[in-house]
Length: 259
Image (tube, rainbow, N blue to C red; front, side, top):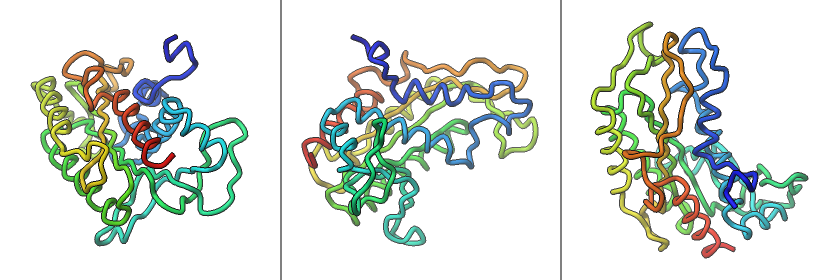
C-alpha cells in the first residue's frame, strides 16, 4: 500500500503545499516564503516529526505515551558564543506531560537532547548561500555534540530550482536570475552529500541530511504552482540525501540508540 493510501504524506510533499498557500498574493513580500522568516523552517520540522513517527512504531508509541517530546527554537549553550538556537530537538520530557489526545508528539522542553535538526533553505542567490549553509550545518553538528554527545544531529535543506526569484530583501523588481540552475543544484546536492557523517556512531560529525528540491517562483506576473522536483538533479530514492531515505535512516538510528 502506498504512503498516500495509508493517509500519510511526507514532508517533501507537504512543504510544497505550504509554499502554495495564498497563491493570489499581489506582491512578492506577501508570498508565504520570506528569507527572514522562520515559518517555513518550523513547518518543515513539524512535518519531520510526523514523518519519524510514521517510519517507526517505537517512536510513535513513545510519543503517544508521553515518553518523548519535541521543542522548537531550543537554545543549546550560549547562542552569543559557543551555542546554537536549534530549530527542533526531541528527547525525554523534563516531567510528566499530557500525551496528545489525537496522536502526534507533545510540544514540551526535553530533559536532554536525543535528536536535533536544523532546517535551512536556499531559495535564491545560490552561489552565495551554498557555502554559508554548508558551514552552518557543520558548525551546528559540532556545537550540538559538544553539549550533547549522544544526540543525533541532522539537517533539512530546501532547494529552489526556479530560474528567477524576486527576493523581498532586495530593491523592488530587482529580480534575481539563476543561470545554469540545474548544474548549480546538482553541485549543492553533491556538496551536502559530501559532508562527513557519523554513520550511526557517536562522533562530532553530522548524522544525516535530507535535501528537498522544489520549483518555486514568486514573480507576480508568472505565478504557477510550486512543484516537488523528483527527477535529477534532485536526489534519487536510495541516495542518503534523498528526503525519505534520510527520514528512514534517522528513525532507525533513533530507535537503536534510544528506544
